[in-house]
Image 1 (cartoon, protein in one colour):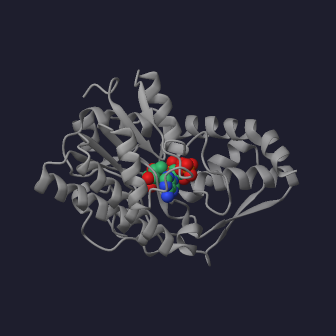
Image 2: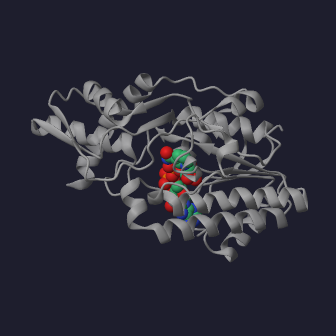
Length: 318
Ligand SMILES: NC(=O)c1ccc[n+]([C@@H]2O[C@H](COP(=O)([O-])OP(=O)(O)OC[C@H]3O[C@@H](n4cnc5c(N)ncnc54)[C@H](OP(=O)(O)O)[C@@H]3O)[C@@H](O)[C@H]2O)c1
């Protein structure tokens, strides 16, 4: 599909992943991009989704808008995470179908996978159990949207596709301690500990769980490719295909930030899912997608970006 002349809505297009995707689409020549902000269109409300569709008459919808956060935010707001993500997606899919959208790209999450999925996670394992409890409401809401798109393709021939990205990181990530994911949380922790001259930093959990991370610009490239090429509602994993323990990740971030103290662990705090690493064969076969940014390179870029924003953050906090 040639996207350059299409009217495209990118929900969540001003967010972390969305802003990288929008930059990429603009550079690729897409001329008709609409980014609905939540202040103008609250996408949890069906009438506002309908109003958006009537105003824009989109040919393509890329759905990234979501209520997201790390383990702490998921534990504190399970109802909000379930409700917002479920109804936003449900209304957008239904109204996109009713308004004749020719391609709908759903950005899901690997939090939809069962807690004890064998590593590497294959798309065929998605239904073999209940997700890890702390993020199940979020993961299941997005999983139902995947089923909605499969059902709409089966009954209506609606062209919806489903992507399952791993944990993302990169410039523009959310560094708010209330809702940040593990990489920004650790970067902030180590930089602040270094600035205070602390002798130790304590991590949540045992440090043993493994995670896979994908640099945000690689994720944006995968979504771009899927919007152009993907023609199945079967889910497609989007990741780098390699895992690292939280303890080793912390050691890497400590080294790049220059924190020389001790790394302690607090096993009384939850670990989340024991291991996460995706089988990325399907993305390679269907999209020709492979991650190209190494974790070391991506972390350095992220830390450089965050440090460059500190004067503005300090000024805003003063
Ligand atoms: N970050 C990750 O590690 C990761 C990993 C896997 C999948 N994903 C998925 O990728 C997508 C983007 O994540 P992100 O980290 O970029 O999130 P983000 O920075 O929090 O951006 C989310 C965006 O959603 C919009 N939004 C939220 N509620 C809305 C509402 N009621 N109406 C309209 N817009 C609303 C917000 O728009 P405003 O700015 O206008 O309020 C915001 O810009 C999500 O679907 C997420 O599940 C993310």
